[in-house]
Length: 508
Image (cartoon, rainbow, N blue to C red):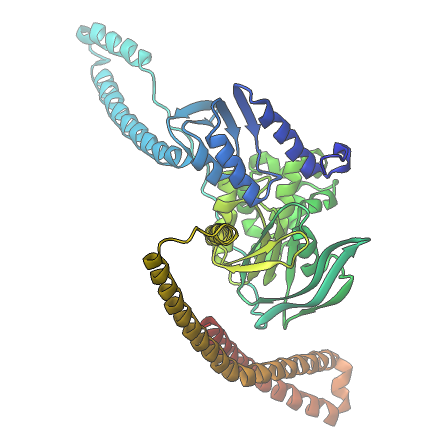
């Protein structure tokens, strides 16, 4: 790569090259505007360490809360047409802002009481000639008072996803999936399953296959080979920055949203748009005049209205301010469906994900359980272990060596016994799960068959001409009632089985 022309690299890599050049120059002041937008999580961590040890001054504009908290010791907040200074990081700013607000409210109330007293006194003696001098003095004093004005807080925005329909236990199954672009084998022989309720972060270096994977599971791209199988009643909604380019330029912001929403959700459009920074008359702007960032936010807001039970989001926070990120984060935290998110934003991901899928160039993706912090700790521990294995400590004296050997044998025996017990427990769970999953799959097939029959009967019974057929109509109505009853009982059984399977799998 060192001998390649910079023009051969993607936009993201060119940004990284430009940043590397800037860091190597070691200026006395570094001005960084959203430096993490094209970096993966591990590179962000490296950059943080480098900047923490940097001797010069740093001015950082960022929506990455973790980076702001880990690096900064002063915060400038551009609010209500002015700039406020805070002597701490972003978390300090949030706390101090509340304290300042409370102090300002107390001062405002005290001043209001004093003004009210003065006005009452003026009104009381205004008509008395003997008090005219005093009244005029009080009026002039009141006019000189600098009135305290409270900052107008932005309206608290909230958003919840439409309640998704319950899907089958397995949302999507990938078997031997490959995705090649010419000689570039981005994904090779991947086996992976996404289960109902999974909250997955997709991480890895640029070019490792994260976005390719998201397009595959969103069915935007087809695999070169292998199969992707959707589960029962799965509805997919997908967002990437490219969706911003697909918006209709002739529509307004509000018109774009109205074309994507059900009547029941129409009343929430202004709140949702406000949460994504389209406030007041902004909603009447034409899409054609929006910036790239504004289009990205609008495309994301539109996607969030879809009643899907599997969300796929590719870098959703790139054009969101911290408040909008929190709105989206809360909504995802309450979401009952499954989601997979490609993102480098640790503070956004940590509270909402339970699995991390890491893409590594030239290797199969690796799954970690827990959030991003858990993943990074596990990676760090793995690297330290590899370093010890590569450079084992020198042998000590005879006594310590003997003790060490005894300890190793002892711990080795314990590990062997633990592995045996774990294997036995897994086999017992597998024996319980096999018949349940077999019954579950048969039940899903029966439900699908009954739903198809119900739809066909619906079509017949909706036709007035069909009722002229006498016995046929009577038989169809009777069968319709039977199918409805069967469906109700099968769906109830399906839910019970699903819960049993989920409980057993959680024990592992």
